Length: 261
Image (cartoon, rainbow, N blue to C red; front, side, top):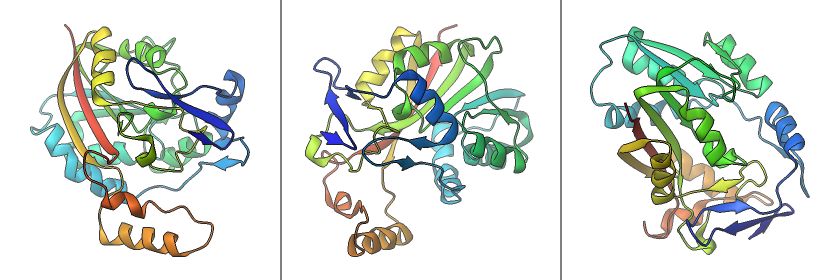
């Protein structure tokens, strides 16, 4: 699959999809900070604070963490964006959570701070602090080297602590049914539940729970937006993906894993 001048190919072993001709490390580092990605067409990913994400997390968090956090729990959200997940956690579980966010994008980091969140940027390769829970929400697909990143990330989780990853369970479906545009080169790799479980096992994490949700939520508001984009010229719509079977459909997964003591 070719998009925006980049080639998305599949690993014959694990089934992971990745860009075979990625931007340089220097270019990626700059784009992560500015939110601007160069290709055949320039891609600006500086979107807005996503209020609908709060409703999503409100519905799914009790399924992942069915019991309240009754003791002081330190939590790092890596790639926290505008702070939507931090806000959802605070609303859902209250004062026992000591929350911190890490965000490299300067615009998003500033906006998250303005909303009262404890957000900065943490270099995982040199971070010595550890947390009871670490989350990585919709960040995995943006990583140029997921194994190396997760290896650094794993060191920030205390022995016996939890790691929560949200990403797509999509790389095993037929490429004709992969949601397009894929957002290359902002998105750089796509995985599946089996491959991610195996990767975490090599880092001494055991998966405890996997929760699936539609990649495109089927709500009247979202459906209306997709219909409008389908009708309007030069707009990309995900409307057709509503009608695929579950076997052919890209799904979002939330994977909770515990680090060995």
